Image 1 (cartoon, helix red, strand yellow):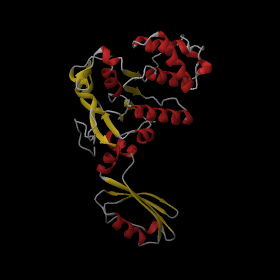
Image 2: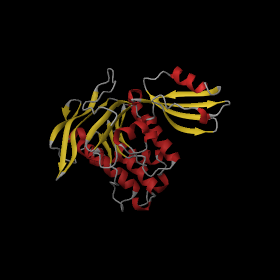
Image 3: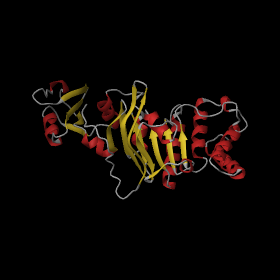
Image 4: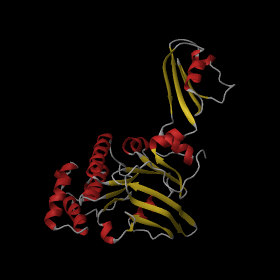
Length: 318
């Protein structure tokens, strides 16, 4: 592992208050330690990405936040106070598994859940109609949920988490099963909700999407937090840098960095890809590559979030 495990979030939150805090939470199921002193914070009005391979503890943590799993130790607070049932009525939850009644009609389903959260019938029906239109499901309002495609069920499930205008969203794999157009729609929707003041904890295996919408991430593996902080800071803290150099001419096969601690990861036509230690100066790399030919394009950058994820947990999932 290339990073030192951390137990307290290192987010650069500035003056943003912490609205959701998970502090030292542990949970064991029989012989399995599902959570081992997991800690994370979600600042007010931010989207925090919650990442990890299957079985890492993401869903258990989210279920604990929603009061669906009793923890063995640690605390979970909302604005530094215990989370009561009344407070949870202000939460929106989207589980990874379908949490809907398959034979209930779509509009009826979307009206039912805000009623559970305390909305009056007329307000719930008006909100349901607004979200049906926003999700492009108005023409499916009278269909049974089980008649919807997987992608439309995912849209409906997200609408259910939002229909009562929650203060915080806990979303477990919200982009699963969506086509690229729907993904862009959902990303824009989440950004709009955050601009409205909603706080979001979001898990996803689609790391490029996380990089697009999240400023902060928490990475867990085997029930423990292994890395957390602002995405840009995490990338900067990585021990390597990626280099891509494109030459106008010259033999890329002639470049031999074996006397340095540099790794050639790609050679193709007039291009060389390298992985070098973070402390290496970009000018030094440029000069070394330029010794075999003129450079027309040179990129020296921190690893992408997906690369950091792989280094942290040893695997990546699609």
